[in-house]
Length: 216
Image (cartoon, rainbow, N blue to C red):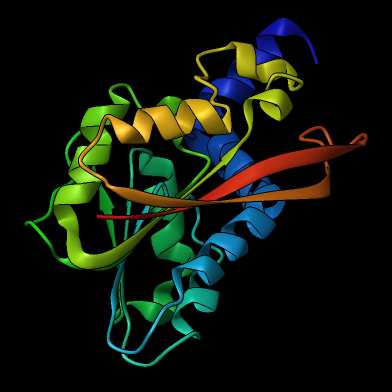
């Protein structure tokens, strides 16, 4: 891909817009689905829980979440109006159980301690003030709640041509250090590896990613 194409891809991975954004949203859901499902599994969802996803994309995985227990309430937030509209359109069947909210990416628009489980996949690279945002997640999570943060490790992310454009990348140690500066007290690290198609679809790449289970 040319430099300009890589820049556009990077912009749309951070904040999908328009027709191109819808296309990239579909591609993200497909290439990230194993990371997303691993994150959902790690949440250990139980009946009657309230779940928040930060950066829901097109939420093609919502059915999987809602099938894991009874009487669940899902809320997704995203900075992309395109993804907000696409998620609502794709998940009309779950209107009674799922809410999608467009927000500005800094403050979570909720009261304190409202969610049992919070998760986010491949969004941390774009957080403008990561410690402040971690503290926002801490604020909306119940005291006995679980936060799962999933990200591609720096050594893998640096091999991708588009990550030089406004991505902040982290190793496990760098992420541990970041979280230690927030209000969160405990975390468990699980490292995963998999082979996936590249964003261009022309080749297979070996992805190394981390699933963090974080507690108050």
